[in-house]
Length: 283
Image (cartoon, rainbow, N blue to C red):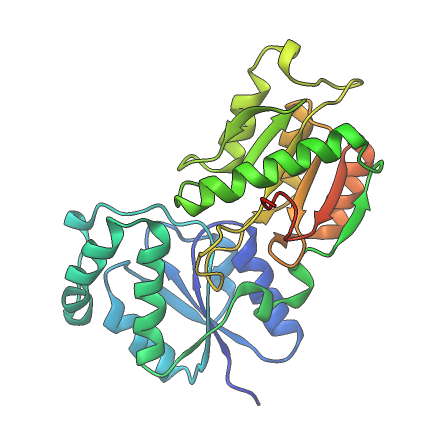
């Protein structure tokens, strides 16, 4: 039997999909659910609940389970570091965590990756743990983007790249060349809900869809932890905001249950499109 996949899990469908795939492929999985972010669907798998500051406990439990490959997946809010309950290794790591946290989420994630690698684990990305999640290139569902929609995709890709370089977010909404929203700490779903409240004069609506959502990785981010993720709810919220489609960077974004996403996009009349990493680059 191969060593089980180690999974440090937050909330959402991504860690569930990874755990299901690890079992289905015969690798098996050992899941450490983060306290305060426990998804009940993961309780059926071998593992336990650990606190965010219990770094030593995480390492020892993964080693005891025989894990070598390790993946981080799921939604976890940045904690109040003053309230964390730390074990000895967590306390030793805290000064570096606090220092890097001031530089942004990506710097903070790199500290965690480096710590686990120093302790002998092979930290892999979600797409390595579940390759079929990675977005392909080209049209996946819905009508092909028009010339004006491709122009919006290009603008949104450029804006997302610029905001990502500042470690702000991974997503942007553009309609007729106008930036309607940029993702920040609220996340993509809340950004789309904001768009749905905008006047219809500057956005689309059902039956007359306009504008696009783009999600792409930050230019220098730690891709093994924080690739942008979409799912059926993304399609539904984009539709509620009147958008014509969703563009994701081919090879740089995760799509949860893509067949269901494609079916829902076809039903609602939105396109799903995997764009080249070069889209929106400055010449």
